[in-house]
Length: 198
Image 1 (cartoon, one colour):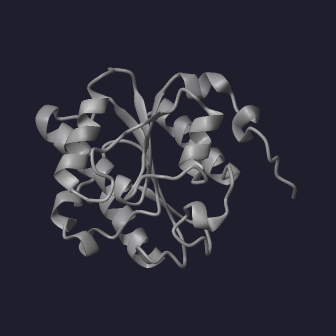
Image 2 (cartoon, helix red, strand yellow):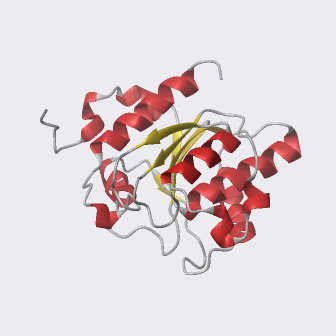
């Protein structure tokens, strides 16, 4: 089946996307221009990137604090599109928000793509938290940063759905995904879940 190569979710209701603030949370070293996160930002200029002070140091408390600062700038329902260590940052911030107020507002949903293995970074305790909003973990069979079985286990810990995406490496620029149209469809499906009862 041929997939369109232009404006993937042009087929999708733009009103659904515009109903949410979408934050892009990259992993270590940020996401370069050919990473699907960067390409999505070019397709959807309203998407905002969470910029870290030091992309070379995976510092969970600092990255989480920065995400919290960006979230606090608006009260709009927010969907986070995270990759690698950005996934751990998202879970950590959701836990902090829930501890503070009993809810993770304004986070409405999270797409967690190719999460980094918390054990490798020594942060498992900080991200062993069940998310109070719809979330989808997308894992790859040959991801060097976390095996698909472990990604599935962490998805269960987070109360997230899990989708095996096949052998896509770390689901990054090296994976050759272009605009990653399938991923955009996953985002739209997640928004449909966020629209309804959790």
